[in-house]
Length: 118
Image (cartoon, rainbow, N blue to C red; front, side, top):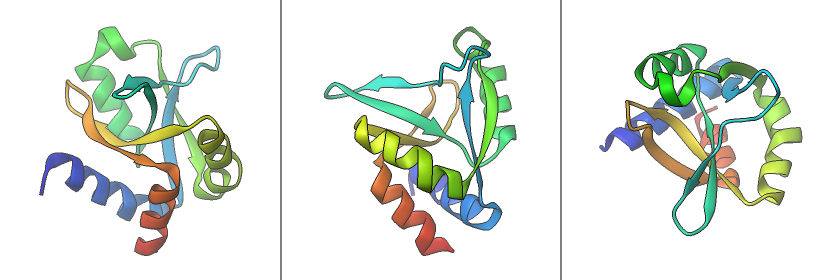
C-alpha cells in the first residue's frame, strides 16, 4: 500500500470515528490550498490537529502562518462540501511529510469512503 493510500485509510477511519476533521487557515481566514496538475486546486484536510502541527514543524517556511481549524463532519457534509464541489476543488487527504505527499480525491468520493467506514 502506498503512503498516500495508508494515510487516506487512516483519514477515513479517524474521521468516521471522531466525526471531526481539520483544515489550515491564516488569521485573516485564507484557507490553505494547492495548485495541482491539470489546472486543479486541492483543499487539504486532515484527521487530527496533531497532523497539521507536525507538518508545520517540517515545513515552517510554507506553513508558518497557517493555523489548524477544526470542523465537524456534519458541517463539512452540509456546508463546506457543496462549496468545494461548486468551486471544483479536490480534497488532499492527510497530506504528510516534508513534500506534503498524499492523494487528492473528488469531494463525493471522500464522503462515500468515510461513510463506508462508519
